[in-house]
Image (cartoon, rainbow, N blue to C red; front, side, top):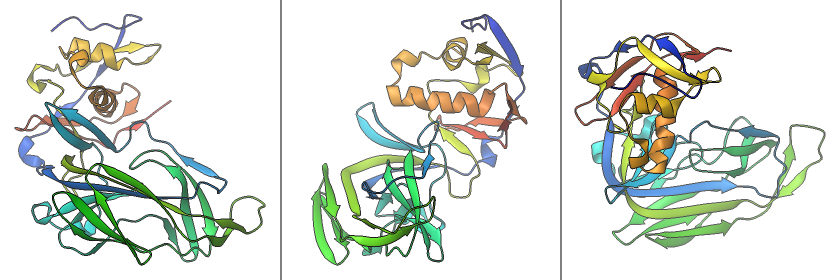
Length: 298
């Protein structure tokens, strides 16, 4: 491997430990129908923003196969064994593995009691703006049937069909709600359900309850990574591009979304400002796994 380096020539030593692959529950890797649903309220004034360094779900194509890669767990406990799933359904909040139809969709809102947090605008497993309100009646959404060519939904008592590759926005009845943040009067909201059915996707997801973060191989060989590792930095921060070069990884040969996942991996495993020692391993499938309770300092 080449000598470590970076834009400012600085490097910081980072300790890591090798985790036995046998100590890692096998990730979910299945090719099956993948449905996205999100409930938005575009006329509502947001009062909070949920931003993420990298979205939990990263869709892209590799070697001609469309995939959705979840590097952090988003799977609901009610999803059951992955081998029994007929399809998966994702929202802004979670991922549900569906074993039998008809089935309720994933959570579209969150909250407790009569307080509900609504998505004003958001992306599946990504950024979202939100607003807390009182007295909100969430619409019932169910997946009722599927075939190789499409999927059927029931939304607030009305049936809809979507072909593979189709997306649709469904306007729902207006509601009167009471915003809880700030000095605001009750207002009317017009919910919209955004539905997208891309069809079959190869799903990659950490094992349920596995307690780790999952990444592609990036073409890396963990046996060639030094321990401790001299991590290149730029302006005092981890230089993820220089780190890839030091490890012999050609990011230019990887799809752009995978380069984004590389940043998440680099920070999860080798951030010089994080407390704790990460445990890293490479599975027989090539997947990289990081198990860590590291917290960033500074």
